[in-house]
Image 1 (cartoon, rainbow, N blue to C red):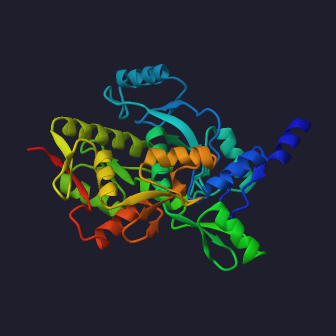
Image 2: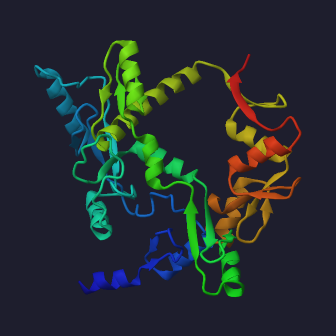
Length: 363
């Protein structure tokens, strides 16, 4: 008991409001502060240790400890008088973590999630599919849905500002200097355009049609589908079911697209007509031709290649990730935080034939 109390006392919480990250010691906290990765739209801040692994049946939603146990379950259903939607062609979904039903932060186990819910009093369902509100429980997250949710959250822009004057603070050094000179009584607050819950609602599938392999986000679309196709879509009643179906159908659709891509000879083309075999190579061409550099958010050092920028951050500033970079336009002396922002700037401000790339079939 005493050891657990000492571990709790030694933990350090990030002082930036809305960041929410907790570290085991002050050294880890200082590394985080230097990285300046304070996005409040990050569902992974409590993901530590080994992930869970359960296997969910897409037809009925039951979970199994092994894939073999799931196969036995499906086979027994198919062999019975009523298969209840179970098919031999179905695949299972790997459940790798659990989401709090109120804030949708992710946890590796149901126990960790419930402890968080107790501590925060998060016993409400922030995302519901119908008027009747059931009991708030940890939401199982399949691997595909987890990865998609994390990717969407990473794309969400955020800023760190002074709580007094609202000035934007772009690095740990900038924040320290500001509070030492200008706002001695101020603090830092992280603000994002969207919350994790709002991002999660983008994966909220109201219903799906297994015959058409389509997902529907609203009841109106479901009704139009039923009327035009003359067969009924399945309507989801819980978020567990909605996320499970989202992952399953998304994987099927992704597999179909990959097969279609493999049957075609595709390449990436710059607006200037130059051809590239991979998207990353085409983007690299755009950055170079438009004189866009990677600028360190801590010391303002500028580098041409992304690997060099990552190496610099790792060696000089404790391994900061890409969110602490800026894209610097040498032609216009403009610094922008996201790749999408700098490419929008290039498209709008640069009068050249190197403003965008497209993927198309090679003739």
